[in-house]
Length: 411
Image (cartoon, rainbow, N blue to C red; front, side):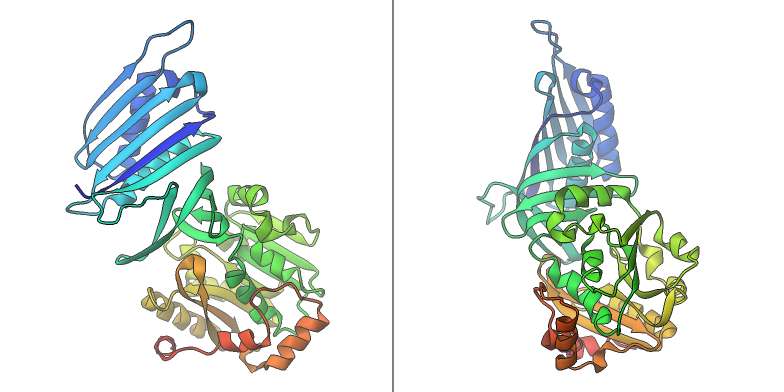
C-alpha cells in the first residue's frame, strides 16, 4: 500500500531514564505524540523486559493507528532507541503527520547521534540511496527536497523545531519547522541580495537593525561595509543563535564575535515598538508569514519599521515566491507601497528554496534601481568588499529586471 515509512536509530539519549526502562511513561509519550500529530490511535501494547545481570530491561511498544502503526524499542544499556513510524497515504497524504510524530519522539529522547531513513512504500520509483530525504512544500500542490547524509541536531525550542543536517549538495543545512532556512553552500543567493541591494545604494551605512536573522548571515554581510559601526540583531529564539554558533560557522563567519554586533533575544515586533533609536538600514530576515513571524509582515509593522529609519534609510525583506505564492507577494507589495514612497521588488533564484524568489527594498528616498553597474562596482572596490559570490554591478541591475508575470503583481 502506498505510504511513508520512517525509521530512526538514536543513541546517547539524555532524556529522563524512565522513558527507557518503564512502559508507562513511554506509552504516555507515544500517545501524546500521536495526538499532537493528528493521527488516530486504535490500540496499543507496551511491555517492560525484566532485569538481566543486574541491568534494567528495555521496553518494546507498538501503537496501532487507523493510518498504520508506531513501533519503539529502548536499549537502556546503550542509551539507545529504535523508532518506526508508518502511515498509509492511499486516500489522503499523511506524510506531514508522520514526520511531525517522528520529530516529536526524537526530540523527547534527546539523542546525541541519530540515523534516520525515509522510505516511500509501494512507490513506482523507490529511493535506493541511504539517508533521509528532506521535503518542503512550496504550496499544497508542489514540493521539492534534498537528501541528508546525517542529522546533526534536532531540538524543539519554546517557539519551533530546529534541525541541522549534513548534506552532500549543500553541506550543513538548517531547517525551522520543516522549512529550509539556509545552508553553507548556497547562503549567498539570499544573504547578499537582501543586504547589499540597499547597503550599496546608501552612501555610507553606519548602523543597521536585523529582525530575525539568527543564523548570522545577514549581519555578516552588513559588517563587510567599513562604514558600519553598529548592527543590532533582534532574534526571537536563543536556540537558533546557539545552533548557528555551533553548526553554521560557514554562514556567519564569526559575525557573532564581532564587537559591532549586538544580539537581542525576544519578540521582534515588541522590540521595534520600544526602540528609541534609528538606523540607516533595516533587514527583515524572517521566516515566512505563516510562522511565528506573522505579525512582522503587516502594514502596522511596516509603519513601525519606517519610524526606525534615519533620513535616506531603507528596509529590505524577502516576500516569498511569485511563482508559488503570487497572492502573498501581491499583498506584501501593496502593504509596502501603502507605507513607503519607493518600493523596488527584486527577483533571484535561490536553490535551497527551490524557486525564483522575491525580495524588496522599501524607502522614502533611497532608490537602488537608479545606480548603474559602474557605480556599484566602484563602491564595492572602494569599500574593499571582494569576497562576494553573487553580487556585482551587473547582478545588482539584474535583480530589478522583473519578468512580466512578476510585474503584474505590483500595485
